Image (cartoon, rainbow, N blue to C red; front, side, top):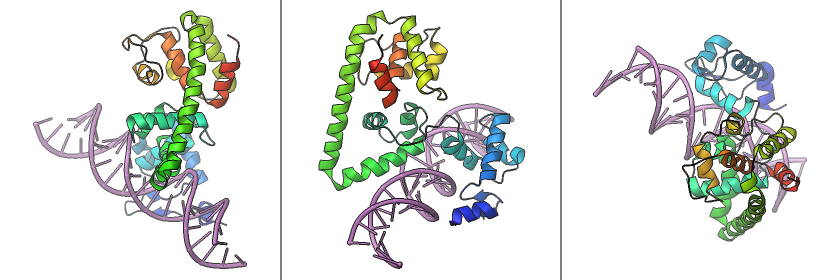
Length: 240
DNA sequence: AAGACTCTCAACCGCATAGAC
DNA sequence: AGTCTATGCGGTTGAGAGTCT
C-alpha cells in the first residue's frame, strides 16, 4: 500500500499552523468539494472551508477543482492535433499556459505546462536536432491539415450556411456529447455576434484580412480549430 | 533483485491583478 | 488613494510508477 493510499485510508495529511490541510486530496475531500460546487457553483473558494467542512484553503480547493474534478476535463493523452496546437500557440504566446489552455477544451494550464516541460523543453535542451525533427513533423502535419482545411474552405466557405453549422454542431454532439466544446459557438450560433479571440487564433492559419468583422463562419472555423483528431477525421470525411 | 535514473503529474508557492471597501 | 481580500497564473517541487543497468 502506498503512502498516499494509506494517507487516504487513514485520513492523514499535513496540517499547517493555520489549521489547513495540505498534500494529496482524499476521496472524501473530493466528494465534499464536488458537492460544494454543485450547490454553490464555482468561485468564492475561501468559503469552501466554512460551507463544505473542508480543511483546505481556497487556493487549494480551486486548484483541485480546476485541474482534477471539473466534469468537462478531457482525460487521456494529448493527441497529435492538440500537440500541434500547443506548439503553435507556444511559439506565438510563450509560457502563457492559461491562454493556450483556452484553445484546448478540456485541458488545463497545468496539464499543458507539464506536457510542454516533459516533451519539448527537455528535448530542445538536450538535442536541438531532435527538436528540429519534431518541429518539422509538426509543421508537416499542420501543413497537411491546412491543405485539407483550405480545400474544404474553398469548397464551402462562401456557401456556409445554417445547415453547415447544424452539421458541425451535430458532429460535436455525437463525438463528444459531454464536452463543452465551443461555448461561444453554442451561444452565438443564432446571434452572429463577434468573437475576438477566435479571429486572433484563426489568423494563425487563415489570415482573412478584415479582423474586425467576425461572422458565423469565423465561429465555425474556430470550432474546426478545436476539433481533436477523431473529430477532425470525421469532419473531413463527412459529406457536406 | 535492487538500486539508479527518468518520467509524469498533482499540488504548492509566490507574485500579480482585480475588485470591494 | 490606499488597503485588504480573493482569485488567477506561472514556476517549482516531490512522490509514485516505470525503465534501465
